[in-house]
Length: 85
Image (cartoon, helix red, strand yellow):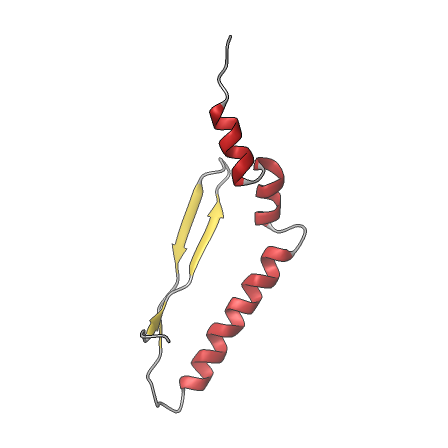
């Protein structure tokens, strides 16, 4: 069940110093029982499908980040180690 009539897309990316950046889209407003509602739902679902395809591409930013930084568990292991020098 969905009890919302407004949807925002949040774009998350890394800047040139590997810091997270967030960008919020213009809101998409759903007016229930409106003749345009089907088109708005198609637009949103189409965007979600496109995002899912993009993150699965071998050259996507998310894939590059995973290769450079490893999984979250390996990051936790790295943070637990200490430098004895």
